[in-house]
Length: 639
Image 1 (cartoon, helix red, strand yellow):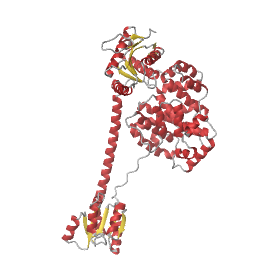
Image 2 (cartoon, rainbow, N blue to C red):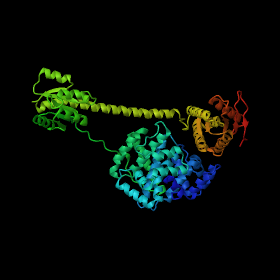
Image 3 (spheres, rainbow, N blue to C red):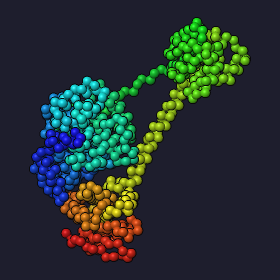
Image 4 (cartoon, rainbow, N blue to C red):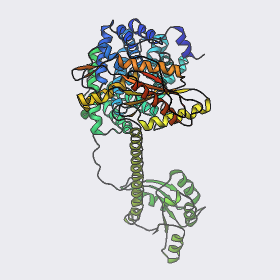
């Protein structure tokens, strides 16, 4: 058994107490309701205030949340459980026995991570803001667990890391404790019920060489968000002289989420302001950071234009003339010159240092100048080198041989320093052109990366309903086809629910379309919170929704439908100054063996919905597939 699993069974790890423990136990009951959860939360005034504040910070609706019941309904049972757990750990473990572990700094870092994740969730709609807050708050819980379970050994681990910071903290932990905080945190978060879509990125986002996830996936977005949140928390606790560098590093990574200077500044300033506010509420110390504009690194001063320094090989078998040529090249210049006394040495040196220029005499021991030139031009790297051949005379025959061998220039041995430097200008222009080409290629790569991000955003937008944030009809049909194909292979059942908001036209006519949009957003939130973790809630048009329930038989689908219907009927929605109860009608259909395609399944559920509407609304009806329209079976009465 792994060390992390043994620790979980040992009872030595941090665990919730009091109200948080009661919520954790209550939420594990299959028949637990949000009302029961809210009543338990109300017994802890501090937790109640924190949940209400977080609900108001995360909502996009103008009307503030003022009651615990509404905060719990808006956040959902799973999120409330995780928030209660995180806040409970914060209150219990403000200090501890591990001397080298800075508990206050740990919670300050975790709080800033939580608020950054919450703010990033407003830009990248991959999860509810409250869920992302929990991810950030508990991202480093494995470190707290090791400090709690092994106070003295972990003190030694931290000391070793301070002495050798080049090694990741996790490497020091594994060397001494046979586990690390990432592995242990994953075990704890999974045991506490954190969904795998969050737990997996949390286990790997600190790995510098982790290959990551497919770029268009939700998991990849969470992976990038966690890295950004962690780095911003590091920035928040960094020494003043490190801040400019960390801001620059954060900006480079944030480009993957389309941050620019214009958007990064307000984002960081708002997160830091929230950090200060939450620090006072939770009694967690925070750093008084300057604004983003003050921390941003200053652009380097423009350097005066200068000729490019060159790497030059001088190949000459005569020691006197070789030293003379080297002296001319290094005088008043920043060139790096490598002498070679024969052609073989010059060729080996060229393959090693990749020079910009080779200045060689015709007569050389070993390979002569012509043979050296031919050998270099036979290689890819050699074709990029500027080659100048030198000789005592300047006969037409020698010039012809030099240029036919691939030389770029010819010079007499008695050349002056000015003449030699003049011949090097062509090589310098070539180096500048090559550097410019590299910059152009880097720009093209950057543009390609930005286009990929934009395309990914467009792809996500094409599958998302802009009003509610739910998957739209196109995404719903794609998902339905995937589950249909999987069910064909495995033989497992699955069902769909088609939902319609009752009397929605009256709401639009009485209160206006803005109120109708508000109702649709509230209904979407309630459906998402009341649905099971494996169900997919989609908006397929107007006031109509589709819930896809994999591995679900008909009777269980009816239980799910009743749960959704009850969630809406029991939670009035504020429209202006009026509280109005919203009801829904639901049609259910299970995939049957003789159904030819997913449209038949949707059509059966749609006919059942029509029956529920005709029977008086606020009802659930079950449809049965036949070649002709069959009457639906009514399973409930009006509430």
